[in-house]
Each structure stands twice: as structure tokens, then as C-alpha cells.
Picture 1: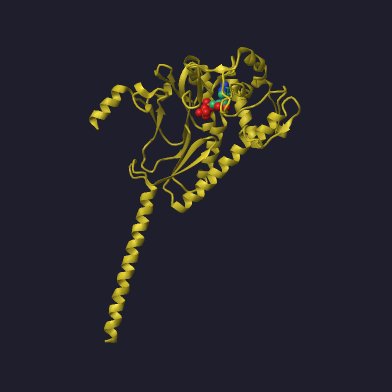
Picture 2: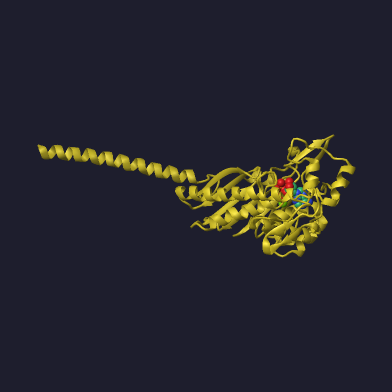
Length: 370
Ligand code: ADP
Ligand code: MG
């Protein structure tokens, strides 16, 4: 009798154990499903989002356990935030703000990170013959971009600050990591390059962990590492820059198919701008005349790293289609897609086999075959 009771109790325990195991299995499955994006071919990926550098930053990690993904994304965002606190001129305690305050007064010792980005910015200024120029800050302030006081300044005001805008004036002393801005009122702005650098450095952190691939998108500054586990290429969409989307073929005008490591950065006139008397003024200035560059609507640059792609997206935006494409064709390892004001798309010869142009017709065709 005793024996029978024990066996009944034993089978009850077994049942409880089975139910618990089933529940555990369901929990594990739901965690795996949580890590998948249903839009893709069942890849296990995790995306974490944070607001940094005045923009939305998405970090995607492939084939990684939840607990590791939390550690990795924590480290990545901490590093990106640390760099923003050095390189942003609007953060009063930043190294860059300190340097700007000393303009016309003294040499300033800066962190190696700021020195590196500034040195690169000056190199890109040289290559683009001043179309990219980190000394544009006094002009940006005059227009008030990014503040509540955006307005169109007078010619007189622009002419007054133009002598302060010249990258050739910046003095560097590499051995002591020191910088000198020789004219009072001079100011640096790294908004056209720092985001790219910060994205690169964020991605470097992911590389230290055992993961298959990672992808960062900081409001159009994209950097990717590794191969997607599915073996697919990275497909990166070029957004339709039309502010009035009424006549647009869709949200995208082109798709780029890229393999392995690389970066795509887009500069457009459709995200940060203000309107006065029916005219749109956006935040990329031509340092030559102190006014927003008017030639094209968007420029996407493909390069090995986001720092380079970011600087050239701004530079080519200022240079316009002809000069911009000419410059890009001369530079090895850098490609570009330009959308002009009429919505026409131009791209460098190296992209021939990597780009798909999306037109109204191709949209309708794919809709019909869907
Ligand atoms: P996004 O705002 O999408 O990152 P960009 O990479 O083109 O676009 O950067 C634009 C920023 O670059 C501006 O907000 C400003 O800080 C800075 N900038 C504007 N004009 C120039 C220029 N001619 N050269 C260098 N930096 C510029
Ligand atoms: Mg840029």
C-alpha cells in the first residue's frame, strides 16, 4: 500500500516536473522570438534604441544572447555618450566648447579624441577645397540653426563673420595635442563629422565581443560590421528627400546592396531646416558665401568608415552634383549617390552593380507582382 502511494506521489511529481519543463521551454522560445525581427528571414537579432547626438540611434546585434546584448549595448552607448560630451560644442563643459572660448587668446590642450577628429576635419577641408570647413560655426550661429532663433541674416552680417571662417587659420601642435584658433570670434563646429566618428567608435566596441555582425544607424549615419548570419548582403535604402511627399514614388528612391564592413552616411536638406517667406533654409552652409548650399537635395556617401562618409556627405552637398561627383570619382574607396532638386538620381561608377533605383514604374511593377 505504502509502495502504491509513493508511486502515485512519484507520478504526480513527474507531472509537475513536465509542466515546469514545458513552461521553461515556452519561456525560452518566447525569448528567442523576442530577439527576432519578423520582417527578416528569421534572423536572431536584437535592436536597442537610444537618443544621442540629438538623434535616434539604433544598435542591432546579430546572433547574440540577451544577457550579452545588454552588456554590449550598455558599453556601446556609454562610449558614444562619452565622446558626445567631448565633441559637442553645445555642451558647455565639452572640450570643444573650452577650445572655442579660448579663440584669439591662447593655445589649448585638448583630448586625443578631439585632436584626432579635428585633424581629420582639416584634411577633408583641404581635399574638398573648403567645401567642408569645421570653422563654419560663426555662420551657423548667425542663422541660428538648432536654436529657437532661426532667421535669415543680412548680407552685412554674413560679410562681417566670413573672415572668421577659414580652416587654414586653425593651428595644430600634434606633439602636445594642442590647438590654437588665432582670431577672436572664431569657433569650430564638428556637426558634419563627429556623428560619423562616434558611430565608428561605438561599432569598435561591438567588435571586441564574440558576435557575428553589428549595425548602427544614427539618424542616417550607418556603419556595419561582419556578415549577416543569413548570408544576405546589407541592403541600405536611400530615402526620398522630397519634403513634399505627395508626388513621391515611396519613402525610398534607391537601394544599396553592400557586403561586409562599411558605412553609408546621408546628408539631406529635409531634416533640419526652417522656412521664412516661403523659402526653405537648411543647415548645410556653403562656407564661400555663408548661405545654405542650394544645388542638391541629398547626398549619400559609401566609405569604409563613417567618419569619412560623414565628412564627404557634407562636402559633396556643398559642392553640388558636378563637382561633387568629380571629387568622388577621384577618391579611391569612396562612392556616392546624389539626388538633385528635381529628384533625379546620380551615382559614381563604382556603384553600378550595387544600386537599384526605385522609380514610380518599378514600384507599381513590384506592387503588381506581390
Ligand atoms: P546631419 O545633420 O544629417 O548629420 P551633416 O552630416 O551634413 O548632416 O552635418 C550637418 C552639420 O554640419 C550642420 O548641422 C553643421 O553643424 C555642420 N556644417 C554645416 N555646413 C558645414 C560645412 N560647410 N562644413 C562643415 N560642417 C558644416
Ligand atoms: Mg556630414
